Length: 253
Image (cartoon, rainbow, N blue to C red; front, side, top):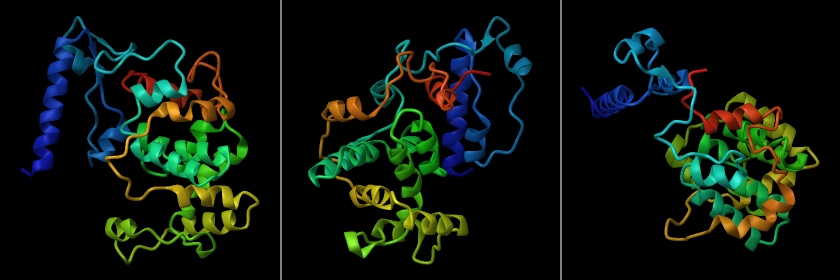
């Protein structure tokens, strides 16, 4: 048994113990299981409830997570749902220091929110989709295509292929054809430089000792992020369901 399996099994045992002690039962999403290389069928609701017949499948706030406000804002998600955001905050501060426009500062602040709160794979596209109803079209476009541009240098703005990527992916890594096609499309687009500036101000090795407060960007967010009065997840936008999923990640349905 390897260390990963041991840790994973302990986590599952801990979750099962908590479920037995709670009034509601929680199950992992299929994506969570796939990320662990687990293709087995999850236990059915009836099987789970046999161990605690008085419990119900969760359709409520998960008591293991901080409770979100009834009308959550972008900053509420940063504080209560997103993982460590130092990279995003430092990238946005760098963009501000470099004197770029506020749209780019906002894009730098939000370019990796899918990684921080949702999923890594295709994170540029997921981040853009989360944001499209609430930001300028140029901001969402720039965030979407930074995913492809980060693999391709641009000497005109001093952007080199990140050394970190050589370590993470190997010197022999070649971006997949769909990434190369997205790069060619973005390279000829009128908003190319908006997306490119995200990669320029992206921090591929950020300083863990530097402290940046979210409140530094209150004014930028206030001017350029359309916060719905109903709260993110409850405004009936095409992306509202994604924010609800981040809010309630363990709801059964």
